Length: 497
Ligand code: SF4
Image (tube, rainbow, N blue to C red; front, side):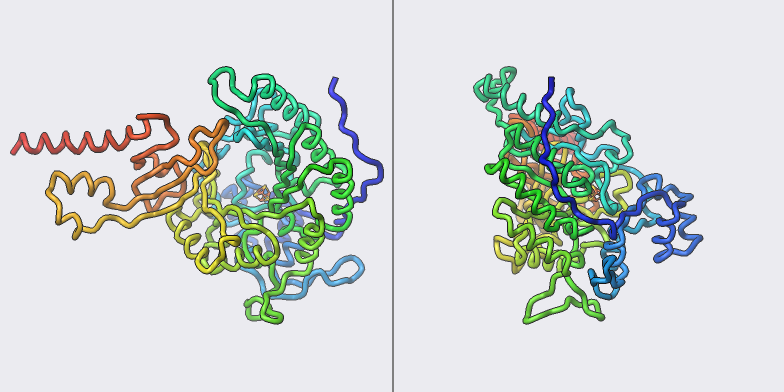
């Protein structure tokens, strides 16, 4: 029989009564009131009629609403939380729906085919893609909704995903690692070296919407399963930073006292510096003694977490059209995260979710933005630009220029033609930064001819000339096929001549 996970008595809870989320379709009072700040009645009706809220319900809370609209905000005792600032167009685009979301709903219900990485015994409840880390779906909500959310299918249940119980998560990690030890670290079917689970990622949704008691239970599940690190994926430090208060710190301290060898890694989701910084009336960032000034609730949240020696902070976010599609905005975000002890880990390409065309910036444009944004950043402030695909995390490491006519003119036609076909438009070079399961494609490359309109790896599939996702000679199949068709065409031409 499964042993229930015990939670200590009297864990302090975070008080968030003043910052309640509002969620729902566009006929719900609170939602309509929120939308009326941006749209007239006819526009709201047009969005509803075109199914924008069928794709994804609207979600907001009073803190993030105030941040978007630049309204002052106070707690129930009248203490200032936010002072009055100009509105933030970037943050508006992050949570306020647009009619274009429903205009083209092409995309994947389950982006990156995540369900493929969900083991049969806990189908849809956990994802185990990379040997060393397992993701548990531990919450079904967030305190506001990013319109570009790639976990839509978890919220609407369309692909069979759902919540894992803490005990199920613990037992999975324990059994997986136990079996691996019994097999001397080798997969008996393939003979490949496999790796134990050392990290558990608590995700959803956003686990920071759970009570401290519930969160403790999931953290304890990871620790008792044998993980070394509990990773918490959350946008709550941007959406509702007061969640990271002294009561949460007290819970973490209780957890640490019980499981002293476990590290807590909080992966935040700051998308734009407007989520971190105070703005002046003209929209510029407020400065004090030559430094940009953090929003008070964010400052407090970071300080409360960094005061704990066993907690670290990292950040990841996608590039989203109209939100953070400016190199300068990304640069400032990286700078301020660095200064405030949050490591910028990934900048992601927007996933191929249903309706992604309303948010996605083409891959090559995103790469360019990211590259520009990294200039002038120290190595500790930098991030990787990657696509989180079915085959693992593909880091886009380079986009090359096409070959010039001038260079081709120096070659004989038989040589110029294949070079032109392969390199003419330039190449996109991607590295398998994270490789699933036994990581047997780790650090290999995927090289494709450029496609400036590509929004995802799927838009490069017919242009790939070297495919490190495959094994052996198959990596070169597409290039050989291209060269063969060129030489056959050439043969036909010369026979006809
Ligand atoms: S915080 Fe994450 S899970 Fe929640 S709405 Fe945004 S992208 Fe989706």
